Amino acid sequence: MPAAPTFCESCESALAQLEYHDAGTDLPYLLCGSCKDRLIARSLRPLEWYNLAKRHGWTGYLIHDDFYEEDGEALQPMTEVEDASDLPVPHLKDVAGDPRRLLEYSVTRWDFDAKLQKAWRTHPPDKILEEVRRHTQAPVSRAVRETCLDVMTFCVKGNAGDFVRESWQVEGLGLHSLVAASAACMPFTDAFERTTKSLAAMPDAERAKSISVLIHFQNPKILDWIEENYFSPHSDHWGQIAAASKLDWPRVESWLSSGRPLSLVALDALQVIANPASPLLQEIAPELLLAPSREHFIHVLREYAKRDPMPRVTKQVDRLLSA
Ligand SMILES: [Zn+2]
Image (tube, rainbow, N blue to C red; front, top):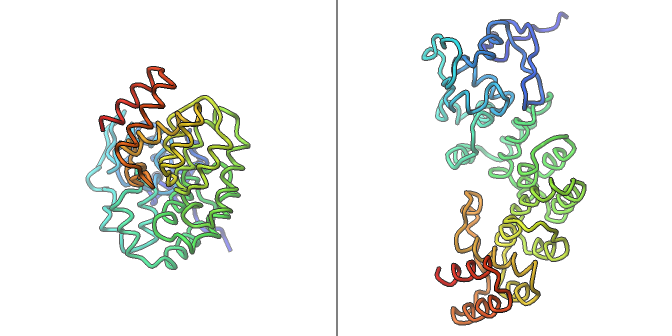
């Protein structure tokens, strides 16, 4: 039997004639000559941009968000974009009822936001898992698999443990998607061991940036890990992880008494609890458990500031006490 013809991944109507390797993607785009010319000229029509983004994500250099809006509008076209209005990208309402199309749409979005999560939650978890399994039978780009992990994190959870475990074998996946899905879908010990093993294997600079993934566990065992594994340089990540991990006041007091570096982590964590800055931390809305009386809180922080009067500490204590 002759092989089925391969269509261009962008227009989906002409036959594919070539492979184009774009920076920032792991699989090549299969394109016809005309779409390749429009891709190079940053002049794809909205639906052509969408068709590439649903297979490869939107972070490839020639289709990323400097060159296209989320509705596929070309922002820096080098040639005229022809018939753009005849080829619009689908809206969420057009795809929400069909898990396959909803998955494609999700891959093209800049954020897995609340509207998208709500659309996914209208489907039963077993149907979602079935669709994700079907979609990932053939080789898929990293972006598609990371989106599948996001879907598991928000909408499938416990049923998706095997899919997430298998994803740890896929090279090059973003650690945030992988750890968030592991924390949501796998038993804590398994997820935590894989994550800390992966962190331990990284070069120092990469590990220092990547520890922020521990935020996803929201488990006090992460506080024990911080005590045993803190490493310099000090960064905001330590306080963010601690704040998100069910931090309680006895632990804060113990860290303040032990002095640096854990005292600095404790102060940073209190600051994050008072004012969670990132969207993820705002969603987690960390709280200080077993909170003391206001008087005791003020007393302990003032005593610490006396013992460690560096400007950073004084400023931070003042801010916490004025909150
Ligand atoms: Zn084409």
